[in-house]
Every structure is written in C-alpha cells, then in structure tokens.
Length: 146
Image (tube, rainbow, N blue to C red; front, side):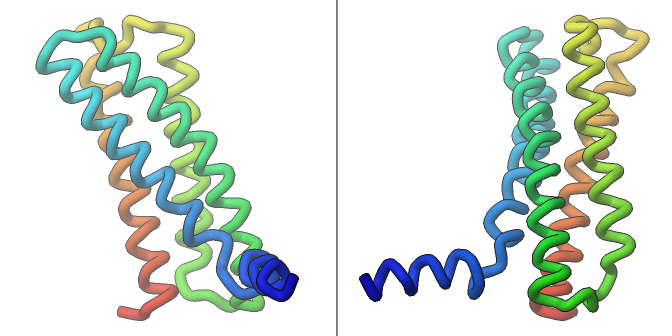
C-alpha cells in the first residue's frame, strides 16, 4: 500500500505533468513532415494520409501539452517561469496551424496534389515542426537554463 501511495504522490504532486505530454506534438509534427515529404517523393496517397493523421494527432496533443504546461506553470513554478508569454503565444500558434492544416486537408483531400496549394501545404507542415521544436527548446531552457 505504501508503494501505491508513493506512486500516486509522484504522479500527482512530484513529477511535472507537462514533461511527458510535450513530446507528442514534437514527434507528431516531425513524423507528419517526414510522411508528407515521402508522399511527395513517392507520389503515394497512403503516405499523405499518414501525414494527415499525424498532423491531426499533433493538434490534439498540443491541447494536452498546453493544459499540462499551464498547470505546471501555476503549480510548479507558481506563475513565475521565463519565456512564458512567448511559449503561450507559440503554443496557440501551433494549435491554430496544426488544427487549420488538419481541417483544410479533411475538407479538401487533394491539397497536396494541387499545384496551387502544394507549396503552402508543405510550408505549413514545416512551420508546425519548427514551432514545436522551438517550444521544446524553450521548455528545456525553463527546466535546465541556457
């Protein structure tokens, strides 16, 4: 019973919740960009669909990472963490970008294959990965310093 109490305390009080959840948007945006590039290279619709699924999951996981990040900001850092305004702005931007990409692709499945939208669609995926990477870097700065 003591082990169970220690485990519950570690999960709910000791360990920051944001740390394990933040890896999902980073990995999912990276995988989405990789699948999209492979889909373009191989002209493969299944790889493009995998990119769509990954960017959709990235949007959902961004919500989870944002909620847990705000919780840790309030509970662990007592409202005093560096770069918090930049992180909040970039997290909202990431959510809007990934959500917008997923919604656009859901409504228009041929986005990647149309010459008029191909570059913008690809740039959106690259920007989402860049945003997630910078957010991860700033999170590391909060935890470990420069």
